[in-house]
Image (tube, rainbow, N blue to C red; front, top):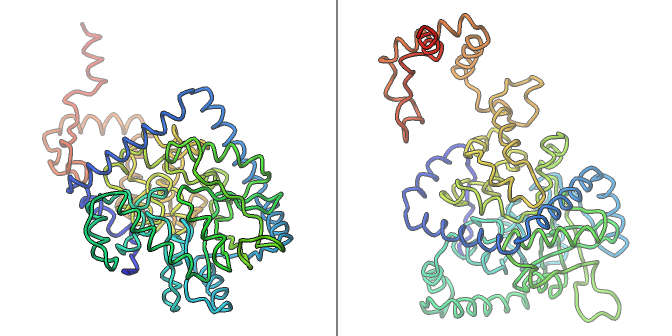
Length: 479
């Protein structure tokens, strides 16, 4: 299986990757069709707009309340998980998370790990860290299995292989799965994957899963899925490791129901997923299934930076439904891989700077039309456009000032840009200088350059009007 490490360089080659997709009509058509389908599915689930808005308000309130009480709820979650026999671990960054999992695996002398769908494990590079230590990490979600087999990363947080056609998957299976012949029959392809994965469940020493919501009052982990692989990962192997970001905690079990309703309908247009799992510890005496040992890894990885800022804290409200991607005109044209980050699309543009540093990710904040479609469909009402504007300002901020509050602030600032904006500020803040500058621009319009950087790559050059508004008004008054 091809498990090469795919480098993350959103700053260096974001434009090149984007142009590559834009120049590929077939891939653009695939993404456009998929996004139109998902938009239609979501719309059909929210026929009553008043019900939708009421549910969104409730979801937003729950997430804001959970974040406002995050330190207390995390302590409560830890205590109640431990009371149920779950071993809780705290990871500050990706290396810590992988080291914790590796220690657990080595202590158990584990050779194979079967994984349910987990974007956090993608975030920390879990598979590569395990395989570097000689431990097989195998994806059991069908979409994740496909991209792992191809040596790729997910292009969408809900549908990892959405960028692939059935012909590409058929070719991949015929090449990588022993004894498989080329077939474009979707049912046959699913059966091939199921046959491979069933054997892996039986062979695995450890099962790893993500967490959709962690309930503080009960010490329970909620996991939603459609394929049943998550349930298999958390019950068949003798050890279960769950990994999640610290923001996924909610206080009460009753808070889960409205969030699940928002999540499933916003993500795949389903009223509910096939499986909703509530996991509350390892197997107890008298129970027939479940792991002998269970661990929960709570990951920070930049989340406390977002949490510390009142405006940016809203980023952590996300329930990972992917609706913002499905409705984003930029994502629909360039796909997920162009972003070069674990989380693509609008949510990736606002959360990746905290995980990777603004210096590595600031171009993503500018890859937006600020049309507001993402905010309109966000089930928990994250003001994504406002946060994108904030990150743009942070990228241009003067380092070592109160304006620069994020790791990597000022990364996009250059001497030339700073000088231009300083001059602009001086001119536009003084009426006399503004009148003089506008007079020279209108009279010297013939000297406007034909090449104006990125603007003229797809637009006609900007040329000042022959007459200023001030001049036109004077002429009108003389009549």
